[in-house]
Image (cartoon, rainbow, N blue to C red; front, top):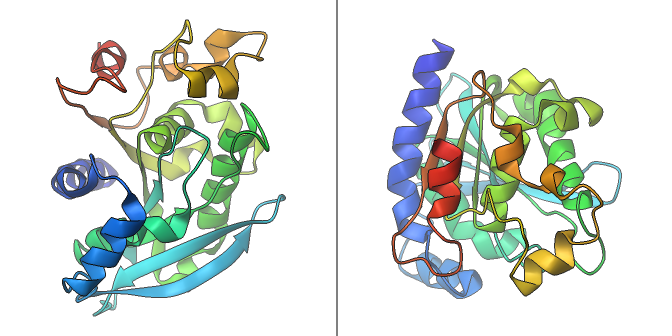
Length: 244
């Protein structure tokens, strides 16, 4: 049953991903989406919920018509080169996924220059732990949790799906994550060449530990990696190498 859930998640999120994989700036898109009626069929059921140990906060989106059964959960991390972005700017993503039948959690995470690797990943792991412990109170099913992200957020999602030890260190069961979706994400990018990657990760003495491809394993949750041949910011080889 859980395998069927995971396959269903990746199929639905592939459709949703096409809507916002290449959007900039996201805050304007969220505003336009609302003006165009994108809020119909979805509602924000919680805003600024505290989680973790560093003052992080998250928002929760749900279908406007909640079913009696608990909903499958998607944790979505936004992109921004580990240096910018906020959960409110990605309200359009929360609405789109909620209308597809998911309970959607959009957490914030600390960014460069306030922190560097691995602090933003630790924030993500604490978000997974919070969902595991609390999402049932919001009508979410803790046994059906997928992670998803765009760009640097895809790095968060895929890294957390693969690095079981990081989830465990945050108090989360690594088995909580049943599937992961990465939209235009960096997974195999050392040596570092971009200014943002250098700022976020070049200090780390073991650079292989910053790379999702290092943690690839046969028993990982199902992954859907969405990329574009024309993407010159996050090259398609990132997804191709990890998939191989």
